[in-house]
Length: 214
Length: 214
DNA sequence: TAGATTGTTAATCGATTAACAATC
DNA sequence: TAGATTGTTAATCGATTAACAATC
Image (cartoon, rainbow over all chains, first blue to last red; front, top):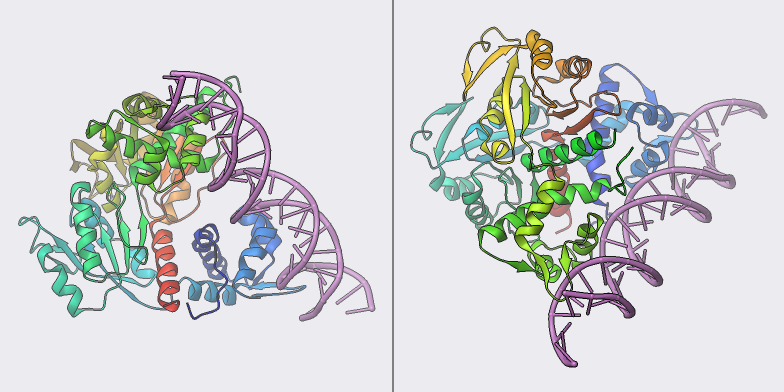
């Protein structure tokens, strides 16, 4: 607890990637500056919220002018840690694991898949993109020999908790979890869940609701 | 607007699938009843919130007893629309599309993939699970001939907006979007976004923050 | 009945929006 | 300079938590 950052709330953080995306498009379209009002129209959030959000990280704007697009883009990139390359491993070389290994967006954002692991002998030794699928039992050694903070879990739910345990014991710092369970990890380990069927259930709820309310 | 439902807020809705998951496990473990207090310990949310949430949908509990697990499970299932089968199509037969077509959790929850489409001649005609990949240009006809509410978009981002347009014009009701852009659709069309790189960026932010604050 | 636990109201907390003075 | 737009404070709104009366 040495650095002076007013604790940023999770809702704000979850908005940052979206800002980053929009600013990227604006930059690509050679837009030089944008006001919170114009960005508000584009993104369908209030100008007030935009200014509040940006100001939590420092004064990126200029009165009477607005925000410089590429400067703001760069700043948010830094905040999100885009400026560094992150090495990532994937545990589970099934369909989702393979899809993620092939997902170029990750690499564009500085996330580099350096290892894919599975315990299925039929998968071990196969190649996905330029990665050979390795035996899951070698993960601890792999983590010792390489500097890896992030693991993606794409194993079936009945194995996910044990995998998370193993990762934590080998000092992983952050986990992106696709398994359909909540992992139990120490507070200092960061977990982001992607529960696809939960998302589909939300959709289903809203669908029923909208049909009923016609 | 005919049915009397006090509008449930999105945060509550997003908690329902998680409740459903935990109640499913309890049911599988033959737990008959549970109090908000015990569920609170299990799920790490306050008992107060649990009771508030459940009460929005009606009195599922009983004073002095708690909640009947299988009854509550069933009720939440109904609320989430699990009681019906939903036919779903996937637009985009790339890696993610294929992974989703093979994702058994969707079927367990009553979501049945009935068609996969792509515009790549190399993919059209191939078979994924028991689904033949069809030409994306035939989607409008397919939607006319079948009763489909939900489409999953897994095409690259530069095609996603056009695909969403096409789907909306052919009366799709709900879209699960994996493309890395925000779709522009009419208000009555339901969209749930799965922005995987946004999730990874959030992870990256939290990772940097936790390292800095050691 | 006494004990437990809900349903529900009231209090608190946090997030969003509005407003405007500061300033480019 | 005048106009525009931020940074920031204050007001509002909504969500969470606490408390407790109702009741099984």
